[in-house]
Image 1 (cartoon, rainbow, N blue to C red):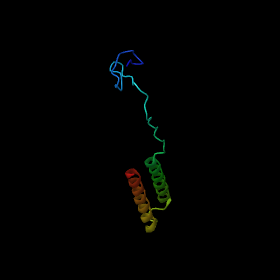
Image 2: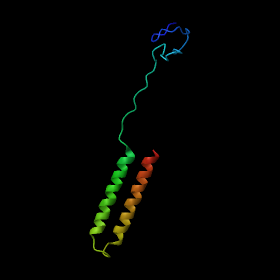
Image 3: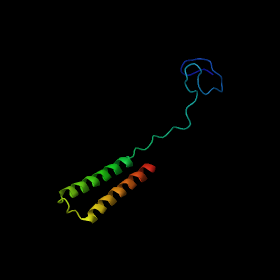
Length: 92
């Protein structure tokens, strides 16, 4: 068999030319391009960060010592849920 690229004599059962590396036959399977998708960890991180900033701004606007105890626990719960969401998204 003659290489179609460089003209070198190669074995009849050769898959590639030993001299130039050109394939002797066309590929049977062509790989598909990976699908582009939005990065979930990035989106989740941004959402959690925005929620924490909004909570911090709200708590910062209240009078010191006047913050209800429930509001503090809600802030802690929001942060805990945010961390859980980030852990879940990164695990996937």
